Length: 514
Ligand SMILES: Nc1ncnc2c1ncn2[C@@H]1O[C@H](COP(=O)(O)OP(=O)(O)OP(=O)(O)O)[C@@H](O)[C@H]1O
Image: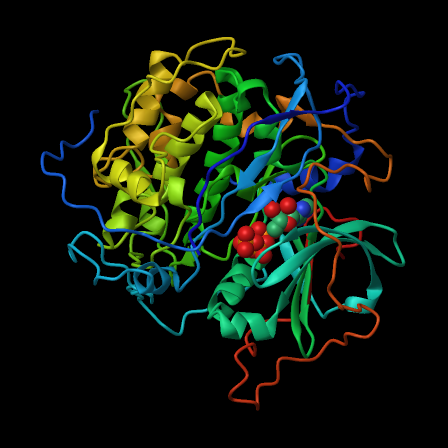
């Protein structure tokens, strides 16, 4: 469901954040996976502004909690901690709700067509990715719910919860996402859970959260993932003075996000829900993209191509746009302030939506607010469709620099209303990486940079390393001891979860991967 995104003001936190730099020993697993890591103008004028429809959707948002981060030397530690409102993405039936609440039928059909079901051009409907790759090995499931002990709830979505759990025999911490089958059926989210499993199980990238096990019981689907001790990037941003970063900091996170999106596009997936809420921080401070339930896969993915560089001095670069070229989808998905114009128009969208959301993210990192945010949803959508991005916001008082012209030029080119002219529409990530804004960034060595924000790890075991929203007490009756793994039975033709694979994944470099 699309929700309001108003955020509230600052409140004091008790202490200045100081801690020794985090140890990198816990990151060796991620480092070892690096081996398989692939790195290898102006706005359209809209003279006529139509009458806006009214988008009266019930409010549905969570309040973010407060915790600390340590900044590296690029930043002044924050003394103030704001409360933040976490923005949620649209649900599959969002358009139904949007218009159900209205007295009148949706106006301007050509502009506001919100289709419930994606119409994706598939080369082959039967195509199904094989999970196993050179760097990921699939094994028979080696755990079940009772192999873990719940420690605390980390997050909550509308069909499930995410817990910090400890594996009994190893004491290792994991994030366990538990999705209720009943809720998924009720909310028409089964396909999304299957898509999320497919993406997590096929991805092996340092900036994408790692899946270790997936299984199902009678009532639930389980994902056992790497626990990101640094918590939510959204929280980290909220804690910054002015809720923003300086240009160097924004550049760092933008570069890591580009690397993750490039990898997803290369594998035929469009992410579609980029926002600070879906970026987690690893203990090392590097990002990990999460929450793939709105992502869409191209079946099969196209082959990457090679494009000439825009500069005669640079070598040719990889074209990842052609990996997702056969994917044009029509669902009304995304998060209000991050939604691209073509998604609002309902005329179909492509991988370019990810580059639009990148533009919004960079703007938010620089200015502490999003570029088209209006007083309400109608106004936000109107601005997304018809208003040019402006840089008139006063830079936050704590900000060390005003954004450079390169930064503004990049944002403008990413926020081009015409997706065909948006930066990234030619060859994908390569177009963006070669923008002058990134001329000092070495994308291949990002993982070896010291991140601008270093998560504060208070306890050696990481259990208290919490930069998550404050969760209400867990009223859920989920009993890991009693919830037994069930196979997704093939003979039950009506079982919508038949394709949810139960498996254990080993990643190249894991100590026990043989
Ligand atoms: N691997 C992880 N490590 C640490 N925390 C996590 C991890 N995965 C998820 N979380 C926490 O749980 C929250 C919810 O996770 P996620 O967005 O994947 O769940 P969801 O049920 O799909 O939520 P939504 O309905 O918002 O899509 C995250 O914002 C984060 O706070």
